[in-house]
Image 1 (cartoon, protein in one colour):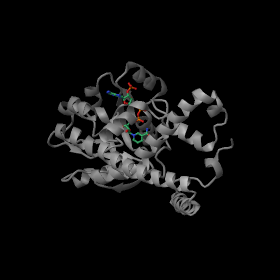
Image 2: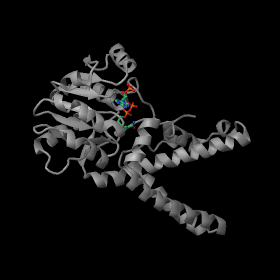
Image 3: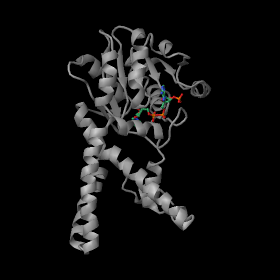
Image 4: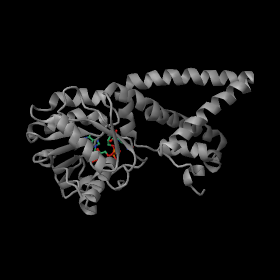
Length: 303
Ligand code: NAP
């Protein structure tokens, strides 16, 4: 048990914030945790399940004594929340966020942070397709990466303390600059989500033709797409609206490769297809060797 912050405030009580709370309790990382969510319904649920030591009915009350304030809301509203809490922040406090996009969040939030308060953005690379206060669990961040993205001139001690905090939550911690983060995440997360959304949308169109065959014969490949495409619509809308340049860049490259594969299929170019799939198979092996997924067939599922 190593306490890192005396008082922590969680703003937004969804998957990420609730997982942080259970993990903080597991590790004894915080003395007292307050929580605030926009809707009375979420606050009620939080009180019922013991999520946070205190749930407040105003965002100002949640942050006023906090040493660490975590913004765990969709990226499109980070700036608005920062403006609301700014006058109530304790001098010397650290504000962080867990948003999936960094450059836009930094430009939205940083101007509101008062002198004497530190702003250290971060992004845990962990999640599920579930959302809301009841979806969190203490082990979500275990052995996953958390990228800390300090803007230039950040206080080194505040950055170090937040890094220790994420380490205490179970993560491996690394640092990155915001633009690089957004490009890497466009490749590893944002574009794959868009492709899954598209594939499920196409299958849904087809379903009208083939009745329920798409569901009935839903095999592993398509089922995995449907899991990703079940992710929270608000969160993902905001990701694409705020990481526009990087996702468009990667989608451009994706489309070019897709056309190349399409041409290979049309021309019966088996060599090209085989070489391509051999290269991609090695990437999967690398992910397993890095301990970021299971080698079990069908991700360890029985059916
Ligand atoms: P979530 O489960 O959907 O929870 C979002 C929370 O934000 C809810 O408490 C919601 O309040 C609140 N909220 C939504 N819109 C709001 C608004 N306009 N004003 C104030 N509060 C608002 O989301 P999450 O998955 O925890 O994601 C939170 C953040 O973490 C996002 O920025 C996301 O990009 C990032 N992230 C997500 C994942 C993932 O896989 N899910 C992974 C890493 C990072 P109500 O319940 O009252 O509506």
